[in-house]
Length: 150
Image (cartoon, rainbow, N blue to C red; front, side, top):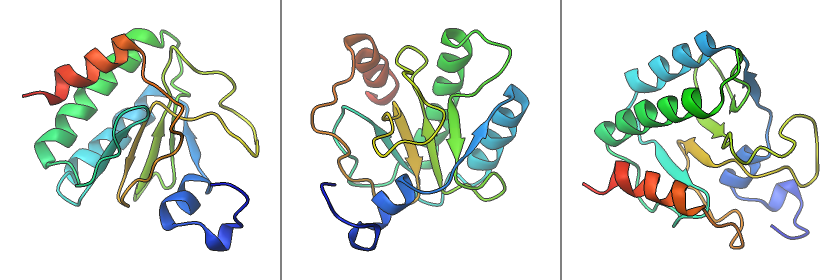
């Protein structure tokens, strides 16, 4: 991204750096997943940071599988009474969702010129490489391969 101004950034980068609302309660996450699943056929891209950038939208079945799997992972590994690891651009009509890895949170809240990268992005615009130096852990790579290798 370098020293570009927001006017020079692509739609993906502008949306990535845009305004987001945190999904704080598990019930809100359930509602978000229900909204996405009911619109699974609109061209969602599923981008696992550290993996190859997807060139094509996921199929509706892949979207549904990903949501089921990521929901299970978040509930298992983020054992809190609140969610707080999922951020969405618009709760009613989501188009860009950042999902932070519970095992690699750093400082997610607040403002920074260099915010931490999420573990996964679900979006309606074609993703672009966020950081070539970010690598998924072996356990996350195995998880990713398990849900999308078949």
